[in-house]
Length: 71
Image 1: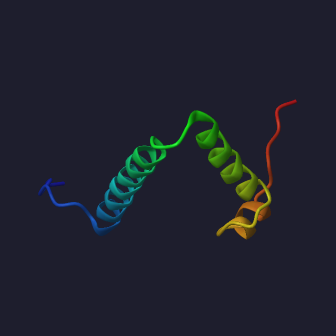
Image 2 (image 1 turned 120 degrees about the vertical axis):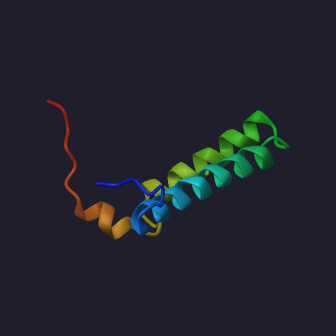
Image 3 (image 1 turned 90 degrees about the vertical axis):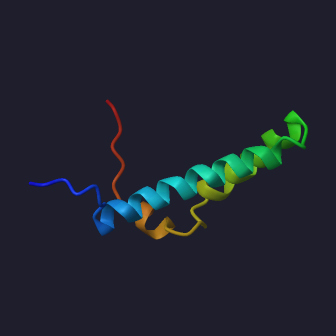
């Protein structure tokens, strides 16, 4: 197989998603720096509560997957 240096469409999409996610995380961290430590903790707690109540996009798919627990 000859490597032409060109990403497949799927690899390109994955790379773009990863770069966008990294940029989003960096922007979020930068914006949270203006708040106190307690305010940042409250923010992350609210995010955790939101996702733990399964009201987020994709919750139906996550709920349908069985969970594996260690014995």
